[in-house]
Length: 245
Ligand code: NAD
Image (cartoon, rainbow, N blue to C red; front, side, top):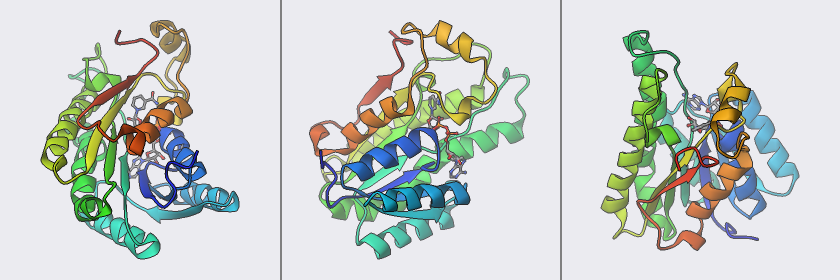
């Protein structure tokens, strides 16, 4: 498949997990890919590997909480590849604990990286996406952006819920301009973000009895970013092995 031939994509959190799988899949399908991450060394390795496999790829340092950082990343993308067609707002961090255990500092950090980043990135990329003719944004939310979680991660869940509604808001604002905006809502996916979490417990809580693979989320992100989803905007796609069913 070459659904992304001639397209340029910027993927935040592209150095690891779901972002890495998304960048890899898009590059394999012809996209020029910008790996935007705070993990510079990893992002450079990813870009080098994609380039060695014949793709066009570039690593850029981006802290998604920085408005200046976003301006620079979008400018570098357009200078290097001539345009920006696809934005994947994927970087995120979690928190642990009950609401009583959550400090204001933790709340603000999680909201900045997980929620405010989507606002900043979408705004920074607006002009380029509208100029594209094939503009698409895919935001990585979570199944916990749809349902609450019990006794854990209030900042993360609230931020992911905000990403879900921001997605729909921008989809409505930009529908007439031809830029589609959708969200994906992963369940428990086997990536570094799970850290020391009891994976057997997560498997047991998932109806399909296993963790998802990053590639299984990337398949849905790339679908939504592609022309295969040309009449889909403001939609939320759950990829959770049946957790929310
Ligand atoms: P991951 O930890 O493998 O990847 C997250 C990436 O985001 C890392 O490369 C990290 O360096 C980057 N990042 C973190 N803070 C950043 C910042 N300030 N600026 C730029 N980049 C930053 O985890 P993942 O599972 O691939 O997570 C990707 C997205 O999927 C996140 O938004 C996460 O919340 C979401 N998600 C993951 C799961 C899961 O179970 N893995 C479930 C639901 C949603």
